[in-house]
Image: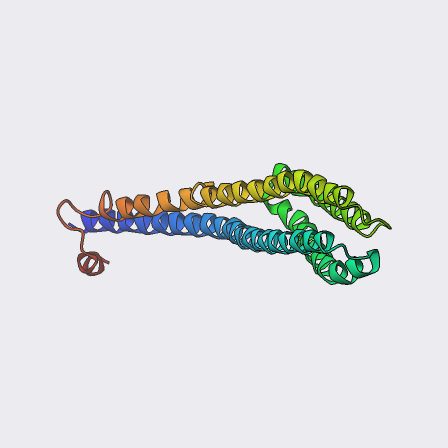
Length: 224
């Protein structure tokens, strides 16, 4: 009887040790996964902010086009056109500055998401630079010393044709990147391994270290 009790104590001790090791391994995996999860959540929120910036930019550019078209139809002088357009052009430039700042931060933060994501964000700045250059050239054309309505309208038409695809491209790219980040959260290996460890721990707890039919901890305490 004493030998059986000693054997059972040894089995319980081994079981407790294994449970402890499994718990430590699970905790380590989850902590690693938590860091990666935090990086992805931050990246998702940052992507949402950039999408909001692009929405603001779209609204401001639409206003710029409307004001420019009205100025052309009214036959305003270059000085009067400048008075109408300068303020809204400055607001657009401020939005571009914020977008560039957001992208610079995003490129730095993307190190945690891998080289591909970092490269994608760096490449996105090219589209932003093209939009800025297009806006600057359009503004210069609209403020040129002419009242030729067809010529001035041509500046707006060229701007619209070139700007819309660039803006749509960066927004689409940002939305897709955000969706990929969200989808990747549930596939984090560390989190998945952590989820697998806990069923294993439960299995170890109830299977080999207690007498058949006795899984309650009170019984184990009496034996010990």
